Length: 313
Image (cartoon, rainbow, N blue to C red; front, side, top):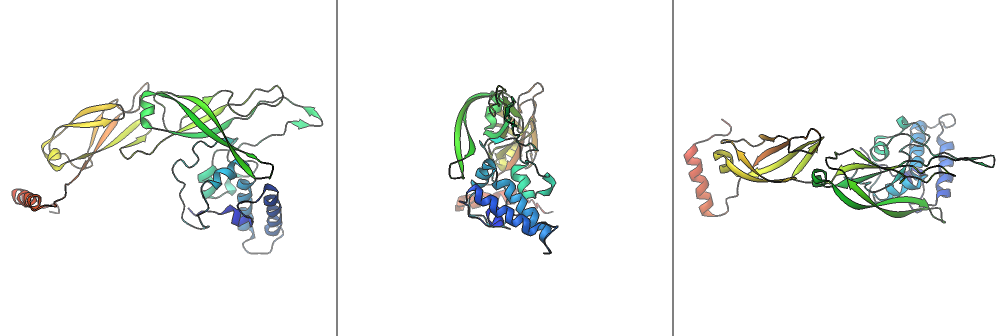
């Protein structure tokens, strides 16, 4: 997808105060409103302006967007960095009062969290009592944390408007219990840790969505774990016992003779723990050693002559 520079779309600097962003939005919204504008691309520009304002008017979304950095250019090929919003606390969801279908794939990839809107609980001088909003954040854990469960302290960032009208990032620390067998995408609920209530209303809850830290050795699909295991050509050809470091400890795996690269060996019940534990699949990757010395090259020549093997035959 293409990166969108929301500041450029609204014609403001990245340091602009919220009032300046609002004024620019109103000016451009009037200019490109399809019922008023005669420009051919008015409808598309109007959608871009609304999308940019949807992000920049919200201190939380603006602060999260800002941490992507300023080195991106509009139209540049873009993929969100892994766990780019880890630890950022959002109140409500990705959309406020707008139609989510009006937004681009770029917006959806960053803020597609559902539709919630904030409410004003004062009217006519009377004070209302209402529950606080739920808040949402994403935290990354190691795969091993799911196998054993763990307790850890996390730091969450949330944004408020400073006196100068610009978003200020604040932090808070929480102690969290990671349940054994948690899967990616699962949410942990922390009761009462969301937005404070209004009047005598109870506070909302905090929902932590789990993602796994990238690991070159493992990948996870649901409760099934895949482990890439490098093996030598002679281990693959002759078979035998091979030590394998799984997320749950060391296993002596039996390789069948004449194993092929890409073959999957199943370890039943060694995936993520659960009432019905997942499986762990060891995926073989045959690694050929380099021939850097004359003795090593001679060994390969003898190997070639012994087999007379044509891999393209």
